Image (cartoon, rainbow, N blue to C red; front, side):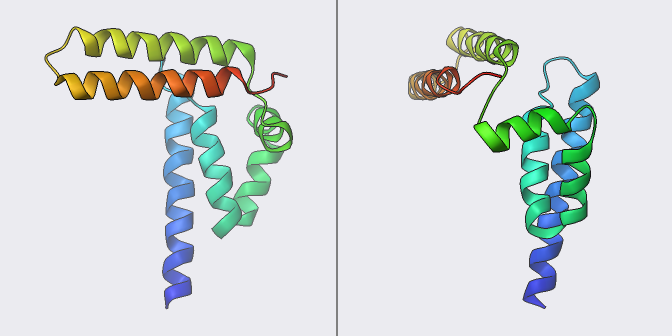
Length: 122
């Protein structure tokens, strides 16, 4: 019973993140590859044929393979992520959000940007 529930949760996460990734293909600003990474990871835990399909896909497979093998992020993805994080911080700073939230999110996104730019490129 527990194994079936766990398998269903992994598969549900794989399908949900795959759906978000596919939506990201057509919706500007919504990332595709991060959702596909989550989908491939969770599929590997509960749905291996989906994982194989993702890595064999002609469009989605190469970035997934580069991430798994090298932890690589393309330079244009780094630029886009940095611009989006900066825009998010600017919008948050001009909002009426509490100071602790503004400071906390800005610090977190800065740390993410540093981590991202330290990743290898392909």
